Length: 273
Image (cartoon, rainbow, N blue to C red; front, side, top):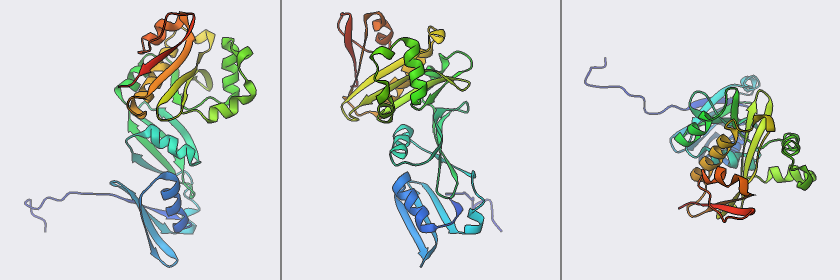
């Protein structure tokens, strides 16, 4: 019997997932997802596992059961979700749903492992991200992903930039984006903004666009709020965020902390301390 003087507490929990190949699964979690600790049991391995900090997952060789796990979910709470999301995209991890703010207070995305498990990675929404979302009109939401080439071309043509945009290079340009966010109503992308740069010292805001019918409704402010939240969370200290704009938009970008000379077309910069 257990007395009241001997309290019981759970100290840790790890899922045991049925998989078709223990070794291949461990390698995927290590090489693609970024888990650090790993171990295998048996020759050939019939059991194994990985760990990352206090998070761990174990794998059991059960190919018949693994054949029916498509869509089963497992959740990881993380810190630094933007960097992790970019790492997974760079490593060609299949993404089932992109990084976006959820109504339950988390920014999260879902990836798929080789067995079909849907791995959800989430981080509590920061105050900056929350304030950006509050400025959106009803029915419009932000999704942290680049627009497709087709969505980008629709926006470029709608705002009158097509004549000085190399539309043939759009696909490559979007693939090299450091960060991007789109404003979506239903299935339609109504606005976007993205960040490019060297990833260490110099970053630039590009392509802040909102469809004309959706302008002056706070969407541009929300897009820039998401950009600034990304820049403050992810980039190194003493890095700079620049942009080129017309004089008529100096006030808009100035509200986000940018400063620049008083000319008709000029660069503005936000310096991170």
